[in-house]
Length: 158
Image (cartoon, rainbow, N blue to C red; front, side):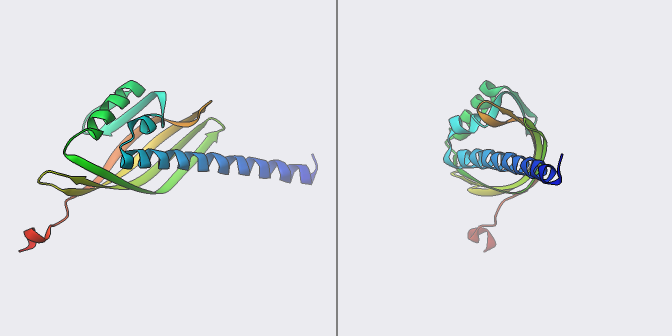
């Protein structure tokens, strides 16, 4: 193999890795916008059929149907007006063309009708991804909660 062939092969591998990373970032952004928009179908489509989700609070879900049921109930909660996730700091390890792992941090602001009208939650996600004919999917997600913060309201300061 000539030097040019080796450099071309190396460049092709790098481009492939970057394409996979960007596709996984797009998947994660689709997930967050689905939460913001309360779009359960789009959210569930981010997961593989056999996905496992450790949501936290002793909630563990297996399979898209169970994940759909959980998020449908969560999004249809009359008290929840909106969740606004802002994610950052991706660490994405491409294992091969069809498998990857990732770690993200996210801050979620929630708006509610109840006595706790807003709250901020810090979370880190540990994920595994699998690529199938539809593209990259989350096949395993574990949430690790970092903090819960209730903003001080003006009325509470007086």
